[in-house]
Amino acid sequence: MRQQGHSWPIHRIQPDGSVENWGRLTALHGGFRFVSERADWLEREYPDRLYPGLPFFLQDVGPQGYLGRAIAREAAAVLNVPPDVRNWNDDDVLSYLLLQGKDLAGDLVVGERMLEQALRGAADARVYKESEREAHYPAAASAAQRGEQVGSSAGGEQPKFVSQVRRRNGTIAPVMVKFSVADVSPVQQRWMDLLLCEHLAAETIAEAGFTAVRTAVLDAGGRRFLEIERFDRVALRGRRGIVTLGALEDALVDAMSAHWTEAAQLLERAEWIERGTARELRWLGCFGDLIANNDMHRSNASFWLDDPPFRLTPAYDMLPMLFAPGSQGEITEREFRPRPPLPTVADVWPSAAAAADRFWQRVQEDARLSDSFRALARRCQGELARWR
Image 1 (spheres, one colour):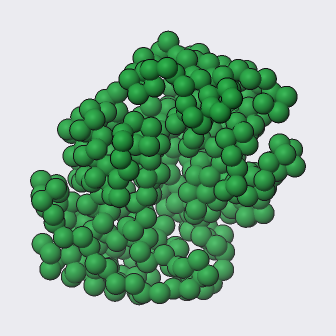
Image 2 (tube, rainbow, N blue to C red):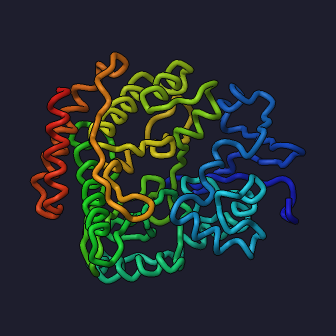
């Protein structure tokens, strides 16, 4: 494997910062073998411990999205991989994991070299006080746009960077920070509105009794910043394992869903998740649909990588993406047409609709949002009221 051997240990960094040897990955002709004495449940679907490609729990930890593209461009010459991460194959991803994968999403580290760098990196991490964010975040956003200080391989298309913040109570919060572009334009204003909507949606989900990411909004340097506490990190040294809905579904069930509500049914029927978790995923699917989130793809929901039955991580990336600017920077006012309350969601739809109504009301009442977006929220609330 490109002079990197053919067999490697896979480690997991625990929440307290200690290291667990989770198993060993071996490259074979036409696939991989993964052997673990700590994950017997894998043998339920892979009794021979053979995988046709990289095991599913490694498929989502490579470079993705906005940060992933910057990583791929930087790594292309060093790793002899394509500069576009979308063209990477399993060997390319594995090269990255072995040579640059010290700060992957989740808690997995492949190989001894990256484990050493991961532990050293935690010890050397720069921590910023909350009072320093107004100066630090604009500089970090500019650096991220230049392709510098890429940091974690966390996915997602919104421009972002990662940092560590010391709260006023002394605790350290690893954060991912999304940001808007520093110019004055309708497109920039729309992204500022959407970042604030993501914050309001997370608060609304939590108030409804479900777990969502903790967020904060900060305006500085002509930009809006959405600070999101990382649930796969614990202070500076600890980590928690995660696996996306798509990776889990592809690996463990015999069908692929078209919507989160269908995925919940498939995973519950196969006994990989319990009824309460399936209900939560269906509720989130309904809520997202009712706040005009048309980007609920299978990487925008994740589970803790613990022994099954799997439990959902905090909800994230929940916002009215229907109204995001187009790929060419144009703003098209699309029609909000939520799904009707079908029988498969009859038990969760009324609660999700009530939460969505509260969300649209909060959007209208928040003076930080533009007048045009608050007017849009009124129309969406009216459309929701027709179904309620």
